[in-house]
Length: 312
Image (cartoon, rainbow, N blue to C red; front, top):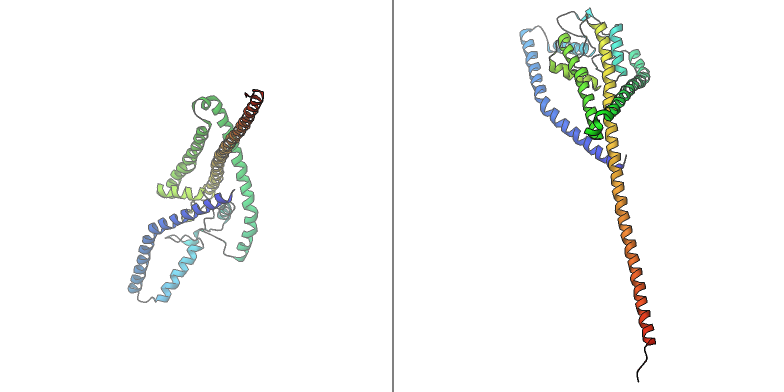
C-alpha cells in the first residue's frame, strides 16, 4: 500500500475517532451526570435515615458491592451464592469469549493461577479459533462464489453488469446476516432474557463484531445455562464466520475495483504518451521531408541556371 494511501487512511481514522468522541460525549455525559446526582442523593438519604451508620461504613459497603459486581456476581434479591460463575459450564462459556476475542469482561480471572494460565491459553486458542473460523468462512465463501458464477451465467450476464452483480451478492449476504444472525436471535433473546428488542439487537451486534462490552450477557439464569449457552456458542461461531465472508467479499470487490481503475489509468497514460510520441515522430518526418524538398528545389534552381544560356 502506497504511503499516500496510508496517510489518507490515518487521517480518515483520526477524523472518525474525533467524530465518535464528540458524539458519545454529547449523548452520554448528561446521563452520567444524572446518575452521579442520583447516587449522591441516595447516599445522603441513607445516612440521614440510618443515623447509626457512618460514612466510612457506607463507603466500605459500596466498595464491597462494586468488588463483588466486578467479580461477576449477580447481586439481586436472590442469594448471590446460589450459582457460580466458575462452574464448568460458565468456565467453558468464558473460554469461548477468550478465543473468539469477544471478551465480555463480566467475569475475569482474579487469581494468580488463572491470570497466568490465561496468557498461554489465549496465545494458542486465538490463532486456533481464527484458523477454524477462516476455514468455515472459506467454505461458505467458496459456495457463495460458485453460486454467484452460476447465476451470472444464467441470469445476470445479459441483464446487469458484473460489478452490479457483485454488489447484489454482497447485499444478499448482508441481509441474510441481519435476518438469520441478528433479527431472529434478537427475538429469541427478547423471549428468554426479557430484554427489549432494541437491547437484543444492540447485544447481537456488539457480540458478532467482537466488541463485547459485557454490559449484557445471556444465560445468567441458572435454569438456562447449559444447553442455552451451547446454542449461543454455535451462534458465535457461525456469526463470526459469516462476518468474515462478508468482509472478504467486500475486500475482494474493493481490490478488484482498485485494480481495474489503476489499469484504466495506466492504459490512458500509455495511450496519451503513445499519441504524443507519434505526433512528434510525424512532425520530425515532416520536417525532414520539407528540408529535403527545399534542398531539391534549390538544387533544381542551380541546375536550371547552369543550363540557361546567357545573352550578350
